[in-house]
Length: 300
Image (tube, rainbow, N blue to C red; front, side, top):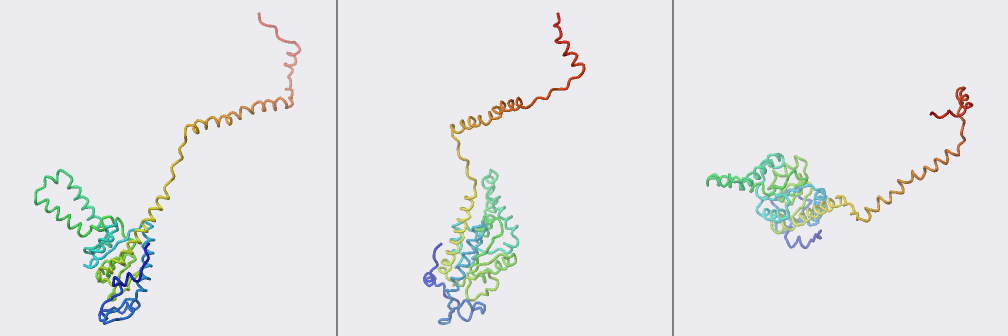
């Protein structure tokens, strides 16, 4: 994981907050001071929040948990789409639909409709559509893609929400809090941080500032996904070692002496029987008479 540099933050203008007249009092612990009517963010707090957020994201991603990135404001949309979308990480960059988390089943239903529309395009039925029907089809498809393209691979609720400017996307934060989903936020000096699990105080109006912070968070998710893939590979059962023809043919021959062992012990059993004292069987009166008469004459 790349080292976080304070100089990198200074060069990107991460430390610039809003005008002092627009600040939120609950952001006081994250403010270093003021200069020319502008609040200066304490970059030590930025580093502390970023380290904590990266640790959580790596842990969740290593467990196979999905992470959702949200940034719908103009300055954030491009960075979110570029950083998260290029790596296959779920994101929302156009508009947050109400109920995207609290009514997730409906979202999945809309995505199922999108799959159905795309399958229809490969059929002969679609080829026979009129221009009007094709236009309606494409309009419906574009609408779903515009709103849900970034969450197409999100098959379950996210384990964490990363939000750029929670003041702008307050509905997303509210839904996450309602469901008990932790919220990591890039937050400026004009926003109340009370509903945020991990605050990363920074300039959320600068594209460069947003890109720098997001790149570290995305890197943490990618690292966790790599750990998850490595763990899955380690759990695969090892293939049995191949047995050559010589080993296979030698196995039955080696077992032959063991099979002959019971037969070899048979003479020992006979010797034991011959060594044992023989007790004469009691003779009855009839048998004594037969013995005194000698052997019976052979039949002629």
